[in-house]
Image (cartoon, rainbow over all chains, first blue to last red; front, side):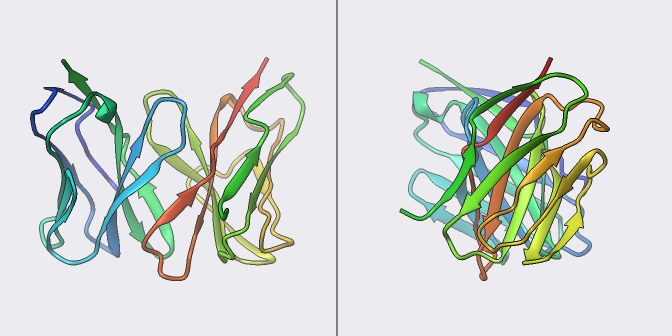
Length: 108
Length: 112
């Protein structure tokens, strides 16, 4: 694998903010992906970061630091439908490797 | 509508039988991928193909085989040599810009 580490589980309240961290091996790195996956379904694309910095897309934002091998996905104004697994993926040489995923549970 | 189709959604087979999972895309993508997902785990790469008539092993290729005779199709065969074949199998494709990998709906294979 590509030593991609992310927390296993996170729980937050509806309307709150949650930050999912991801660290990865920096050698041969091209870009960092985040996907959302509901149970029993295929992953759906959330974001792709190549350059350092924060990219905002509605309620979801993704940050990348290439030198530190670090990324995070920020989920704002949490809704019940955001309860899902969030996969951090690292690309290199036309391959995409994923971490084990972070299960986010949103409580009312 | 463009996309990736996988069929069937659920597949049951007896132990010792080979089984082929289909994957078709009409996105005109050159690169196609097969992943396996086990409960509570991320996606692990089985095989990938960047162009017709060429493919490479991923991280867990043992017990699997693929072919890429057409750009649109990338079938995966789970052979009897695969020791734990029961899993969720996902096919994906990547366009030229490699900035988004598209996934099919997946096939859940259960070996009895």
